[in-house]
Image 1 (cartoon, helix red, strand yellow):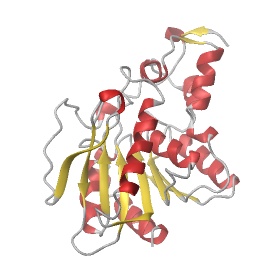
Image 2 (image 1 turned 45 degrees about the vertical axis):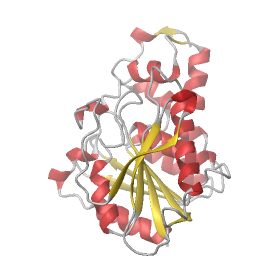
Image 3 (image 1 turned 120 degrees about the vertical axis):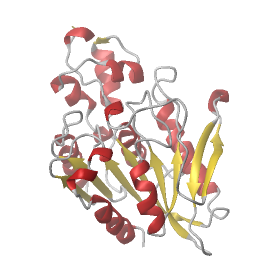
Length: 284
């Protein structure tokens, strides 16, 4: 299949519409957060995280948070922020991580950085009073793809106890065939200018849905049913594949929800309460 990029529909992951992006990270208002801790420096790029640890002796269950932004934008203090306070108030430690962005850093740099974050959190579990066997990986949008991809690979040193992808772009090939906007995000991430055989292979190999196998951690998918950027079908397909391989996978659908949890506040959704309940059950 050979078509010029400009003639193929592919949504330009306009994830920036949910939260305005600034190169400067906004200040955190949640007390007790440890800020800007370096966890890796691939190629001399300093990758940092913010950490919240509850009061008490622990060990606490922990969540590693991966922001969205179309793989090209965002940082550890935008997009994913609606989860900071609910997790903290519910007794979870959390670590919100940065990763290298496209197009300066192409795939799989961002996935490698998420893996590095998981390894770092496990290595420093005692220092931060967390249980390394009770870690959930949570991502939204582009970060959901990264979280689902890493969790589905299920490598021994980056294995997690649970994964929660919000509005996850799970099947890149399907999106490339059915979406209605330009290919900017995939071009930036995967470095191709034409949808030739090599490009389709890149789309296939980076799709979380093609990584699924038996023995994966329980998964909770959360998706708005009015999402025009990443259709909710992406989550239903991933759920079916996850379960068909013999794994646990639940789905919370947000009625009227568009792309980005930042816009869900006006819907009076209880998705955060459902998320906390699910995490407590899976990480007990």
